[in-house]
Every structure is written in C-alpha cells, then in structure tokens.
Amino acid sequence: MRNLLLAMAFVLTAVSVNAQAYDGTGDQKMQIGANFQKYGTGIVVTYDYGVGENFSIGVVSSYVLGVKESVDKDFDSRIDLKARFNANLGSVLQLGNNVDVYPGLNLGLKNFGGHLGARYFFSDGFGIFTEFTTPIAKFKTRDLTPAEKLHNQFVFSIGASFNLN
Image (cartoon, rainbow, N blue to C red):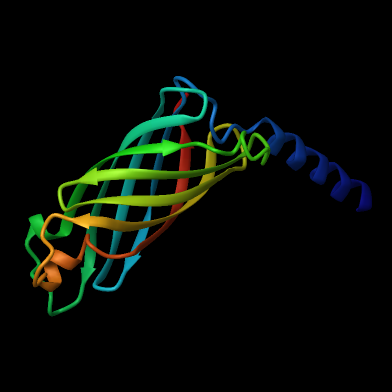
C-alpha cells in the first residue's frame, strides 16, 4: 500500500511538472467558470492569446443568470463583452511552469477595469483559475440602476482553464 501511494505521488508530481500555465508567444488559453457579484451570479468565458514572453491579449464575456428581483432582466443588461490585456507573471515570480498570476486591464461595453487572476494547471490541458475584476472607470457614473450595476461592481470568478495549444 505504501509503495502504491509513493508511485501515485510520483506520477502526480511528474504530471504537474509538465503542465504549462503560460508558454509565451502563441499560447492559447480558454477558461469557463462562474462569477459572483452583489446583484447576481452567472457564467464567464475568457480566451487569451500570448503575444509575448510575459503578456497576452484576449476577450472575456460574462452573462448574469441569477438576477435579483429588483434588476431589469433584459438581455443587454445581463451580458458584457470585453477586450483584455494580461501581464503573465508566473515565470517572472518563479512560481513554476504550472502556475501563472496575471494582473491586467480590460475595456468592455460597460466600463474600463482591472483584473487579477491566477491559474494552476494539473496537466498540459486542464487546470483551474480564479479571477477578481473591478471597474476603474464606468461609462455612466451617476444614478446607476441595479441593472447597470451588474457589470460595474467587484466580481469574483472561479472555474476551469484549458490549454488550446
């Protein structure tokens, strides 16, 4: 039994060593997960493309599914689409090949904001991520309705990350 546990630990270590959380130019990652905020919960999908050794560009879209009763439930109130820029710092911080930390900026239909995320890959193709997003500048600043606040507040996301290379 002890030898079996030792062998499993060795295999898991070998798998995690070969995983790449960010591989530089040409790297492609897709993430899908849940987002949580004050006025509702929903889904988030991101795509990042590596354009340099430590930075990537991409898109992120979110759709709020569970909306509080006081919020307008129109489609355009629930969806957001953003372009994003990430500084992939896993290698700079020497966190290992399977970990990436990425602060970044995003420009969307509702605001200009920032995000801080982290990815951990268990294998070459699959990992988990978490991300915190907050607006820096809202396109409408006065008297926001609850629906306008959906994508203009602090958001926490967590989910699965996939390597598309």
